Image (cartoon, rainbow, N blue to C red):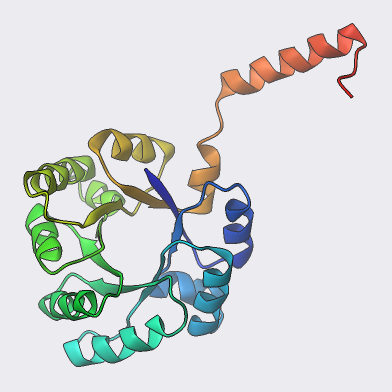
Length: 218
């Protein structure tokens, strides 16, 4: 499974990139607004830190506007992934960008039928929003499983399932079990994956026992 971080905060991205475990970055208008910085400058900076896909979302909602904005974003760096909404115009733009050899992330997916259309349109990634489905008392993981089954039925589909709106470490685990190709999560969620109280307790005991030996490895 690939790990993307869902943020526009440069320091958080750089810290995770240093681990060698980060495969890409996703951003959206809300995250860019929260950063308070120029959109294209932020994307350019992220693309210099991360070699993998960096999703940059168009603001336009019409086909022609999406094409103009997507092509402008693609000029920033080779690893920019153009992010479009799952609408008819978004799917049309996805088909065009895909034909031009550009990576496309189709976002705001909430049904298996939508995911099927995105794959037909040539999407590189489909982004089902798990947490937002859970918020309205639907099962986000069931959607991941449905998309996985559909995509596996048709090997010609090259679209990767990018589980988004991840809220907890359990969401990450469940996404992996359901067969998602990628997860994108906030920095705090990714960092929390390494934590377990028994790991901390065991390490504390090992350190204490080692000190008792009076030895040094170096």
